[in-house]
Image 1 (cartoon, rainbow, N blue to C red):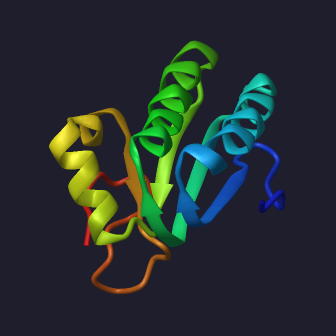
Image 2 (image 1 turned 120 degrees about the vertical axis):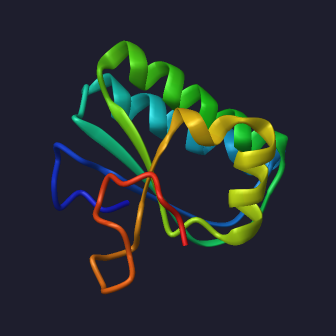
Length: 114
């Protein structure tokens, strides 16, 4: 987890996000959202696999964020996760940010994806 900006914590999610690994992530997300940050960023740059339990963590974070006034952003979204988010309709709920401001990437907070 990146705590360099306490107002915008970054949760780095790697490996497999599935039934066996989702509970600790959900607990950490709830703890972070209790602090009412301006935004909570999920960095999926190292994510290899996600099942429906992992998807439920993202949706739960969005719901809790709505109540706390926290924007949920996704960063470094792999293609397979983009497809899952699009097919399930979750894309419209979330703000996706690029990994950086490199040329050819949309500005932070943009909903465009690569």
